[in-house]
Length: 270
Image (cartoon, rainbow, N blue to C red; front, top):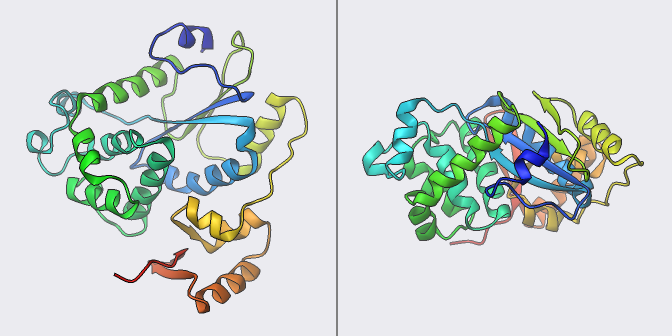
């Protein structure tokens, strides 16, 4: 898994100005990828200045699913439900920006694993696009475009070149393009990924201070109490107390989904 092979190929990404390139391969329907989300968010908040993040898809696609993609991912051709639709939707959302793609992915995971909504449904994916304030018309056009197929092919190519067989998988590259990438398959604690970053940099990490709570909710649509406590390095009880104050001030809303409490910025009345 030498990066020179990747960088010499015209579809591979350009070198980063940050010292570490981080590829995270996910499967939108994988339970571990839902559990990965809080870890990835915390890495971004504390250490994003050290790495450039690329989310790539490592989705199992039988031949019939690839045939659907070759038909331009048209819901009319594939039916209104299809197992490739979540992956296609993530790529379509990314055409509106990397952060838009990440917001869409986060909301889609919430729909799938907390709300038990069927994210293989085209109509549900359009609803998610609306929820995260994407340009829905553009999303629908991109969903059925040949650009989706090419974006999927790039991710499949990267997974093959980096020997990625499962999701989630992290692949770290340092500044020396001659060095092999460091592949970490499976799900581990935040401390493990933090340690790897430090070892690759060869120096102690200095975490950035977390943003204000208002800015945090601007960046991430919904967060759990546990996530917020971990980000600010406080107890869950302290986090809940602060959130309840903001709830009374009508700055945030509390959503109870199954056994999980989600918090989000107060939505304007329609």
